Amino acid sequence: MTERPKTLVRRTPWPQSSSRAVGTPLQPSVVYASESPDALDAQYEGRTQGYSYAREGHPNADVLATKIDGMEGATGGFITGSGMAAVTAALLGCLKAGDHVVGGDQLYGRSMRLMTDDLPRFGIATTLADPTDAAAIERALRPETRMILIEVVSNPTLRVADLDGIARLARDRGILLAIDNTFTTPRGVRPFDHGADIVIHSVTKMLAGHADVTLGYVAARDPEVRKAMLGCAVTLGLTPSPFDCWLAERGLYSFELRYDRAEQNARALADHLAGLPRVKRVLYPMRHDHPDHNRAMSLLNGRGGHMVTFEIEGGRAQGNALVQAAKNIAFAPTLGDIGTTLSHPATSSHRALSPEYRARLGLGEGVFRISVGVEPIEILCAEFADAIRAAADVAAR
Ligand SMILES: *Cc1c(COP(=O)(O)O)cnc(C)c1O
Image (cartoon, rainbow, N blue to C red; front, top):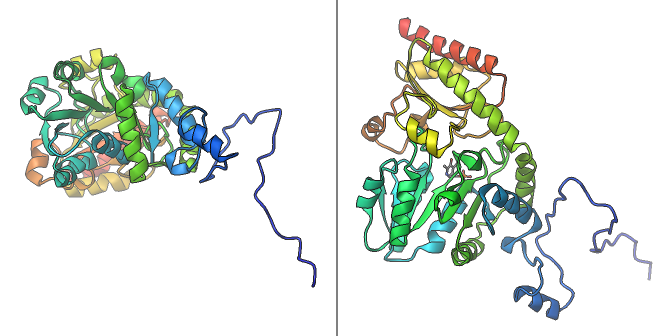
């Protein structure tokens, strides 16, 4: 018999090192080998700490979750495969048939769809109400209301919720208050400090910050609520990829720098836009003409965030011209990238709504939302001024 070629490669342990990697190692392994059935028992019974199967947890997710926990003042938060997976874990993990949930009436589009189209199929009823008015939320409550889900700052009109008023209501009635903190980030507000029970993030946006990762995060104050959400996430397969977690954690190190720069830019760009001809209105919470300016000053501590919404005169033709003229600004339905992006609610985030409902929200064809990035502000001001002039030229022709 001829000798077997020596090309067989076997699985071996990771090399030991007395020095440690400074950059976070990436651990893509799906499975983890245990020493014995006894060792596995100890792990499942919580007497030792260890991983078994990546859908149930892995180091890159834990490293990322722990860092976001620190930012939010949370413990035991976990990472999901998308922001929507985090919303799903919160809703499906905590609610059952017969329950009722109240949502903000300007929630992220898919969160709204989950509540109005999907939850009813499982016997869970939803009412939407205006979160800038705690009395409106109170009127929507029923004896079987189990959760309130709101965002602190709404998309794209940047209305600021009465977080403290709603938290008081929720506490008095024993209703879980879930806050999607994606727009505000923990640099704007830490919802647990205001009485939230659950905090949700689309890590995809400002936290990861580079438009190359889709991830979510969810944490709860009560360990029982956490357990219910995590169990649901693991069963439904909402858990994340190690590489995405690795990328997001890498992005997190520059979060403060990116956020502060983008916010400073947003403030200056909002004022610049407001001074341009053909700009009908500018929405930015730190501006005195914003309807929730006072609440933003107290709740957000004067932090206006990196989102600016503005409206130009005209319709689709002017909108097309504006986008085409702004060649260096990606026209893309996202936010939180290090580079400035521009979106058009009427054809993206709010396209599922009827034109009448959009008009009621003040979201006509001329409305654009900017997710302001970290570019030098003079460049942004010049590019937007040029683009708005190009839109106005169409009108003049
Ligand atoms: C983007 C977003 C989501 C959904 O996050 P994905 O990561 O895209 O699934 C949820 N809530 C808000 C406020 C968002 O902006």
